[in-house]
Image: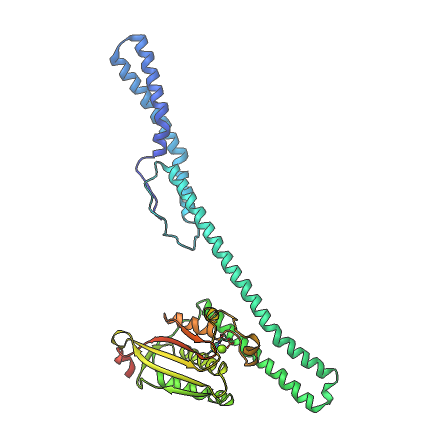
Length: 360
Ligand SMILES: Nc1ncnc2c1ncn2[C@@H]1O[C@H](COP(=O)(O)OP(=O)(O)O)[C@@H](O)[C@H]1O
Ligand SMILES: [Mg+2]
């Protein structure tokens, strides 16, 4: 915000003008009544008026000038965090007091904006903590239940023993996955986890991810088919983050599939000049209802909570995907037909025009 300043202290002029005029006029009247000489009348009237004007102006400037400037400077130097320069240009203020009033009004707006943002952050924080404690409760109480039963005597039965310990372990593993996902999402949401771009051979990464998920797919009788349309697609991305995106999407396509279902992964160049690579993950699974499609990338949203938990899900996978793609300035597109399957699609920056980087 720029300070309006003028060589003259306009408040002083506005304050000094009426007493200056009145006193000049009064003196002129008296002199005219006394002498009848218009030359004297003008001269003395003018001198008296100027004297009063000058005195009032001088004292007004002395008392108010610097102080008004100081108040303005305090208002303008307040540590506003948002929108500091978004002040709409206004017509010039009539005087310093009016300018101060406008600044005070602007400051009020800035402070209410600050409070609104603080409220939003606070609500987000409360909601996040609420969600976390809710999510942590289920596995913790399960572990507690199994251990209590074992301590209450079930320890003596080797079969129950084995079963309960396995179940307790499964819940502990869930807690580990959950805390890892929570750490990741909070680092993504606070912007702490910035992508480190490098050129990667996209199809190799996809092959790796598919290999690592093959066991899960076989367990569910799901086949993953990589329709590798572009064998030499290089992408300019953060390797680990994009790997994470692929794992989360392909894992979902396996988990929310039917037995004997299929997952099709494909890459193809798109955009002008092959500047982008479109990656799509299509499944023949249970699909998602239209009204839920909008919500699946929300933190902890699951269409079917018990199915998601049963499959070891945390409800954070798609939220993480969305954040990672946003940090790459890309978006996730979802199409789905309930009962038939879903397609998750996103684009990545192709490194086709960065031959120098590829060979490096
Ligand atoms: N390929 C898919 N087919 C059907 N539903 C899906 C698919 N991917 C995700 N979903 C739905 O979106 C929800 C959120 O997904 P995600 O954030 O990965 O959480 P999680 O898999 O841990 O439950 C899932 O619980 C599921 O209901
Ligand atoms: Mg998931």
